[in-house]
Length: 421
Image (tube, rainbow, N blue to C red; front, side):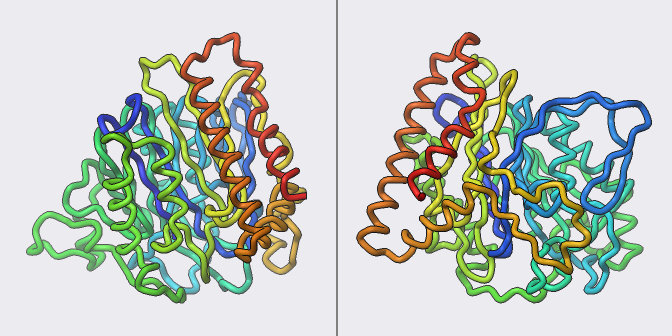
């Protein structure tokens, strides 16, 4: 259950592309922010994802991820080439209760797309090829209270020039390109008969499977494969259609002088009244906003992550790709990398250092007490100052400035933590 949005020129300031996502997951889940440098791999080597092993490629790109600490893949992230990818759960007619066969899960596809693609369009090819080869499936949460939770996935991919919406149902898929304006999606299939690319022989296979009739005309992907949500209690304001309209409304009314900037997006992601910032049976456990610089700007892109729950009471921290980049250790789970399969029967404390510090501060801020409001104001001002100073710094960025940004995310995460302790 996640909201993803992309804003492209001419609606943005400085002709950048804005990518944003809230990750709505079980409230117990810890989401870490981690960085992996580019790497070369031996011919014929294998890669173990969350559940299954697949062929590794010869080279993987540098990536920064916001990921559930229990799995290999990621809910969202970016790579060194300015590609951003996020996924959101969708329930389709091919989601079968009790079918927990282990394949690739949505988070795996996100990370694989970022590791292997230099453009958003190339990312579509990477994900759909892997989907065709391995399928999607497997338990999608570690929290026992959500049972054997499985779902299918929709993906949003963006780069400096365009965005793509990729929706899936089993091994079926449809994709749609957006080159200007906005792209918004939230936990429901939305592609109709306007897909620009689809899985091979989609119409024939949909008809043979009983999902579409020849007399119905051109296939409508959403109508053919959409299904009801199983086992999640949602109020009217938490339903995807409502949240979708609230995101679109926020984009229309929140622009500054006719242009949308990062501050507009931060406000939308923090909107609890609309459930874009989800607080309830599910919780927004991590958020990302990326400012993908225009090709002609000469500026590096900047990717902002929270790594903590409840966007309203979290601080976005900047990450910039460069040689010797690091995200530090403040947002790395102490149990990161442990075998995942055993954890479905055990309880592991996956809280990273920033999570633990923020947990204390969030409990105080959520009380609404004078002390809590004071802390909240302090953290808001810290973030505003950071956004302002980083934006100004990047506007005059030179290669000689690289040493000032290589550990920026970790330094600010440490500074944030000290305010809570």
